Image (cartoon, helix red, strand yellow):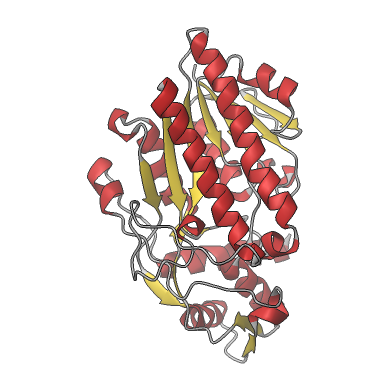
Length: 330
């Protein structure tokens, strides 16, 4: 039986991955410090006989040595989450993203030297592209960040360091790694608490509140359902030619934030709701910069695996709204 370790497994994406892996007859260990995740996300599986949960940090070296000692695959999802948290706590962002990745890679190298080659999936982010002006980003494009005085860019820079570290471990030690850059992953259980726009809009609509759009709402984004994203992740991990590769993972169906707000209002049936506009400085901090267009080039992913999304944006919005309604009924 394959033993899978998921760091950050009590988070939105990690909890869905844990469910999928158990359904695939794997033994699953989750470690999460619950700084942004919650054990409630694991309610459906927490008593499963093949599931083990550890509430602790990936930065705990002695714990990680013990946990990694008998796993077959690692999915490293633990990271700082959301623009709002990143803006408010840049030290936490940098430390959370870089040191645990370095520690995990070193422990996997230690196991490799003992004769056990454990494959690692590193969850990265579209944030690594910074504010590259291209209308569609491909994996070999330049990273374009703003100045270090704008803390907003610390997240992308720290995730890029994670990627550099993982690729260096492959180059110097042939430690098998796969890197996935996520683009706006959404679905049930995602919280809007840290600035994620779709659940934030849905929560506001369910409460009968105005939907708050930042800046002018003309920003373009793409949203992918968590099940489609994780199917791609798992297939990449099962594909030998994906080792040492960097892949955009997401949807390329484009929508403006204004249109997203309008579609959420329509999906909730609350046509009386209004849209309000808020400056970035009011929402985050003075001098905050955002990206006008964030669209992935998915050709490398599609050339490597059979990556066909099953959810379009209409279906995604409908499911997130239904999940929010179910929570209200509870």
